[in-house]
Image (cartoon, rainbow, N blue to C red):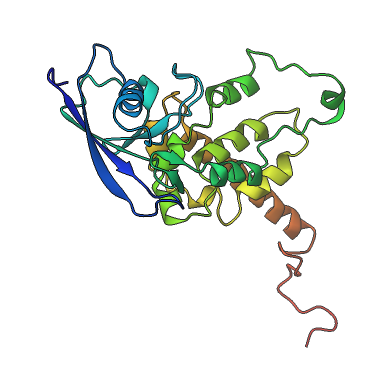
Length: 264
């Protein structure tokens, strides 16, 4: 970090009220242990009150301040200026509609959570009283590494497939679906697995692990997606065998190679 000052190039505009995107430069004198969020609030308070960005907790718990720092999606509150150099470029998260400057519209992200059925659907006794899963069991071992997501959108921004296919459910939604598919207390497992195995689900993931590398919480959505692929493939294989044993191919057509009565 330069002792005499840091130049921030911040992307401005992009929303309905200011559609012309551009970069605007601001210079600040850094303080020890200063973060990107500290710098943004200093710029807003002392140089340009119109600068738009989001933040809430300031301590890495909410993920609200996520943005791109020198081309990488990061939390502004946990990214210190140390090591960023004399010139720092700030942009909104990729793959999101921009509302204003560095603030993005999270609706598409959360809509995909809903498409992946990212809510709990307790079954049977679990719907009446909370059931317990042993913390030492295999089920807990599969779920635990994936439950600390705070829906900051960083993995979604890092995902090249979301940029290529805007309908792709994305890493966070699929990671959430995996934790629920693995939960034996869930009633919606089959429907959820069918949804995430659809056209814009797990099979669109090319396993580049960009989401895993970017996640500040150390979660690996790509690993969850791979596990969902295995479950979907196993379910499809079981359906295929069951259909053949029942005399019909998947889709309801007869599995026999010969003609049935009435075939021409």
